[in-house]
Length: 403
Image (cartoon, rainbow, N blue to C red; front, side, top):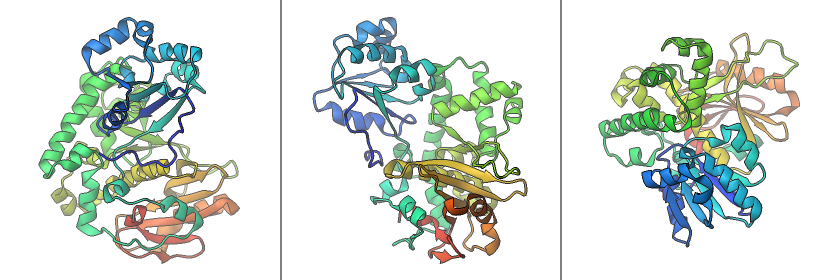
């Protein structure tokens, strides 16, 4: 397991560092390495430790220093006890925490730890990590200097790569069937155990059906009423369930990019699964099925690219916010990245080996909406060469994300 793909990890100038990300992404492996440097290591996956933490949070924390606490979401009240002790002793680096659910979405937790804690998000392995390369895709995207990758993965090999996903345990399994067995077991654990740690879920037995519906709508606009209706719950409950699945890093919703100068822009979020291997498993997509029906690959590929971009953002010094774009004329851009200085780059994803001028319709609409703020736009496609398509536009190989 490699360390998280990040060049901007927090310097230890705060008393608390929290590493959050999906279960089995490698957080524990990373912090256990740090535990060998004299830190006390405690995991709330141990039932005895969990009981102690839940029954007396203040007593549990009392006397701990330079401690690692794994799976903090299982006893979120510990964070309030940690706040009290660091307010009394503000030395840097006192607590290293991990969480497989985003406890910072709980208002009293987020507010109480403001200024006392830095957070690192650790998603499954990026392709650049697997390839052992230092990526610079986002930097080159914004300055318009993307080059053809040194080694391109295309065609069937790229399909295999997307179906693999980024979880270390799935990657280590040498057959598609064993990887899908692992994915099903993983999802069962998330839906029956991890969600119970963070919320009371009414129709717990219906969640697999709910997740299957989300998988069929990945890379599409969110429709909470339709999602909720699939298990006979309200629009509001459907929205809550999607939010809970976001908290455990199974899915992400992406807000639309818009400007007040344009009145005809769709303002509905978009949904993505955060791991393409899990997504393929939920949808029952094998290599043979995708090869027989290439139409099943587009949404899977878009979610794969979105997840890769999120991982690359952690490795970049750029401060970026991801969005999507769609106007009322159905011109769209799959991923819009806004830099903290207001500059915009667009990424459209195509599963095809050829790109046509019409494929840039959404990017041109985005460029027009942005004006001078538009930095560059690319159509990522299944081929080997960077091909210019006019001012600040190009077709770019998918492998350029890490090549």
